[in-house]
Image 1 (cartoon, helix red, strand yellow):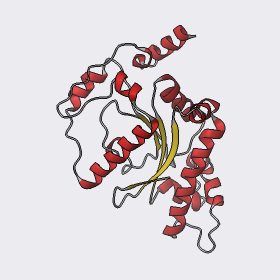
Image 2 (image 1 turned 45 degrees about the horizontal axis):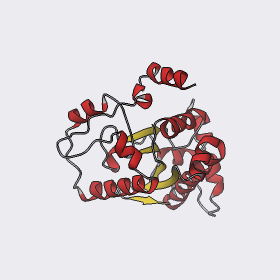
Image 3 (image 1 turned 180 degrees about the horizontal axis):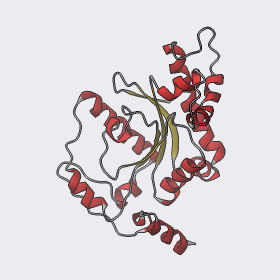
Image 4 (image 1 turned 120 degrees about the vertical axis):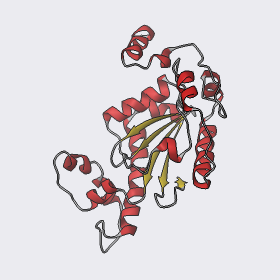
Length: 234
């Protein structure tokens, strides 16, 4: 089984996940994640690192990284500390809002930051196989996918995608205007969608649930305010 998994990793260009070689870690002003750093990292430590990174992002004091040195360092293998499920929104890039470098974060992105079989499999790879310590479901304010679900938008393949978000719309009991014109309603649905996605991960992936129950990883939700850059955690 181990040989089969290693072969699969090579086939998809992720041989570093099965490698026992530790990548070089030198960068101009930042230490790239390597095997020893990832092994020593706890789930709480990974969350703290993301929180610290968001504070740097908001304050404008982001780490000055030599990205090409990080490319060379991670060319041998990758040891990300965290995995983020986020929206495709151009304002919500997790590496940027958490001030992380190359090799620090696995990133799964889909409009509306929900999970399906493919994303769940990706999360299982990122944690069980490649050692990531935390799974973060990152929603954001003013989300176009959330607005589309609120408004029952019909448009090609988008229709089926929005159907996966509509359960979060039903989760919100607010009376009155339940459309995208109501900013408060949209925000409540976005938050409900994050919480629902966290629950879906636990319910639909026995692998991730077992790891979370054993304290090997944490699965948490967070919301990005696109007007301020501040991330709030659940």
